[in-house]
Image: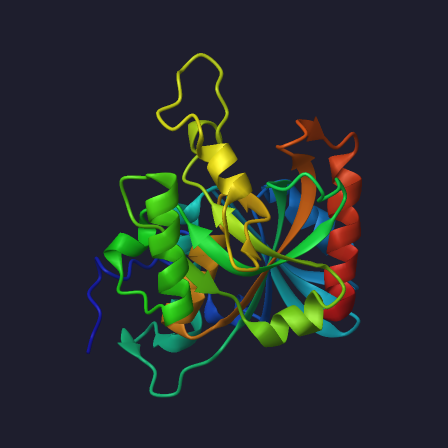
Length: 284
């Protein structure tokens, strides 16, 4: 099946539209960060940087760390950006960009998100490094895809829908266990809620009143058996869902820089992120 020019848009040099990358720029291991400035926080540890690309919020550096080739890309904020990032990343390795046809043999990438997050439980200290086991999507991205969920995931989704009173069904998806064992073996295990905004969707109220004033409390108290919600941010659910749909390995690791229950924010958040970056680089 040949993919049309408007479904798969390429730049004049043959690169994919938003990322502005060619297949040769994609390593088997991808580190993804939200903040474009964090690309430099990662690549400064590389033995060498062989390639750089700046396009909108998508900044890419390709280089080697301990003689292993790594691509680090910034995505910006939100699950909509993650859909663009994942789709174009997959196109670079699994579609022949010249013939516009999917390749017969599919390539599996390892994608590790390094992000920041706020704790939903009082006993999670600032400075914690947390590896997301499950992601819970409060965004609407998967309404446009057919995401398969197993019975446990579907059960959590339905239970959360009922207990929070949200007018839509969340989705629940697990990350790659082998990557969690490789990268996050000594990190706190968590179940991460992904929200479609930073303020009202995360229970923050400035001048606008909240439609769901008890949402933060509902997420804090929610549990089903020994399944609790540990933290929330704005991207992990899209990482886990798109990886499942496209057949890639993925792990989201989080630097806990806020505790929303205690209303505490880290004094030196960059130090917490820096130590997480070094930990991930040593383990990829």
